[in-house]
Length: 265
Image (cartoon, rainbow, N blue to C red; front, side, top):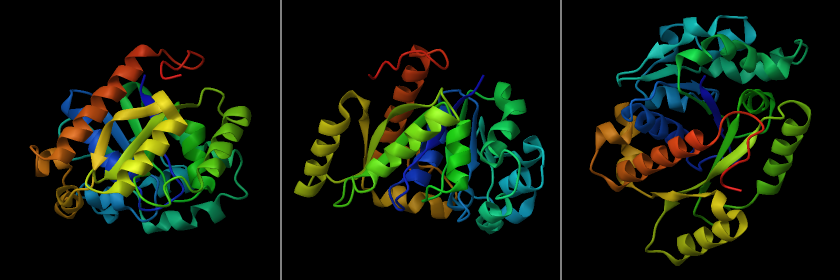
């Protein structure tokens, strides 16, 4: 049964999509079958994997038209890595689903038939705490939070934490924090080092050892429709995401389903 992880932060530009693409690719490189679901109407994850939403069914069809998610799954150019693409149409989903029955669990029900086909399902969430993000949290077992090593890094995390707690309490009692990953780290700057220190003080063992560097190569890779391990496998970004994937695999191996204590606590 797949482990479902929502990559979450309501702030934009923190590295959610970069993490979804590259963590997914690195897990696939470890021989795991991985499905990425692009839940952001901007479809950056879809484009970053070299796909165009107009080619077929998308997550919009699954959520709003009761489509079968298997019909929307597309193989990527990379072994073991699959994608459910997004489209700008998804921007209207929150309005269209307002009157829908069980609107916050549409994604969870759609994913249920395919969970046995994958080892990991990664949900790339939009930069908001609306209905699309709520669907992701209701579907997930884990939350992974990217935090950029910049001035406003911790802003909004209290609200994010309250949202996760509310979902856990009322909709998804198995939801747990997998951890926080530091992104856009530049060890040459005092600011990056200070932010990293503050994040580790706040979250302790829940912060991944892998630190994602600020990297031109990481920024370039999506324009070629490639994850960093294909675009520049010897880069610092590729090494960091490979380490992150190994940590994620370790955490999954140490836990066995809802209700089991988090080894990071």
